[in-house]
Length: 315
Image 1: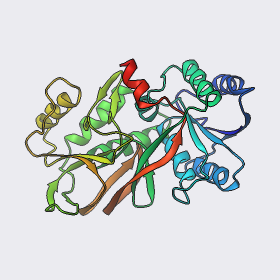
Image 2 (image 1 turned 45 degrees about the horizontal axis):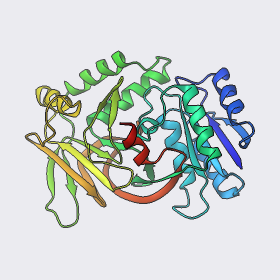
Image 3 (image 1 turned 90 degrees about the horizontal axis):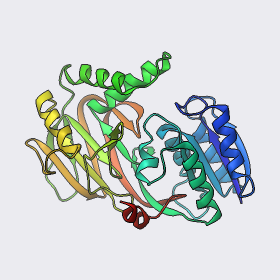
Image 4 (image 1 turned 180 degrees about the vertical axis):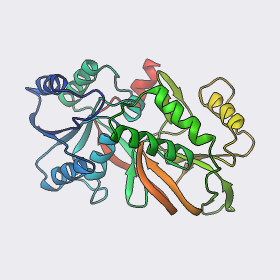
């Protein structure tokens, strides 16, 4: 078996010692090639070349959610077909939503041991993904305030500031207290248009994100085995948002709040805005858009991860 390990040297939890630990763990299980990314989009290129060259059985992302997203997009450059290498993930970012949603350990050493186990036993899970226009996403996309928050945090990181819970919370507060975000119109076949949305979460799995150890469940029925789930709000009033976040954290029963849209297992839909609105996929900013097309892509990738039944047994 051959594996390409794509290393993001700028990820929060990546250093030379951890990279070497991963390579040592994989010794004897795979023939391994390692490449460090040099900038935005490089992991897409590396994974695309590995897929088209058909020389790699597995592409492993060592980094955060952004690294995993870029590797997945590279693997899916030519769409879904039978010659896509499997995706492996060793979480080393600030949040690692994708890996945690798959049931992979947060601890680095435990995660590398798990990857070796899945490789040696050929234990894969096939998952669906979402797409927005030309970009695939693994666990979630956002339109509106959360994308603006993601963009602002990434700009701070580009200036050398490390990501932290307190910095993200402060950035979120500033954006949520700013002027209202543009109005959104959501259209899906067989339903009347839904107008006036100010914030939209499109989820491919549960949870939507984490605050430290606590999961936020905007769409608790979302799954890698179903199509897309939606959670949208018509207001960004701080009090209403606090109630929504409390519900997502499990402090109140999960039911739609006033002005909230919830939808499960959605195949495709479009979103239009009355002015450019920020968008992100898996925590990676896409810039501002006025028209978006979302689609669910079933059984798109094989991932080295425990089966969902194994996760249910552990919980």
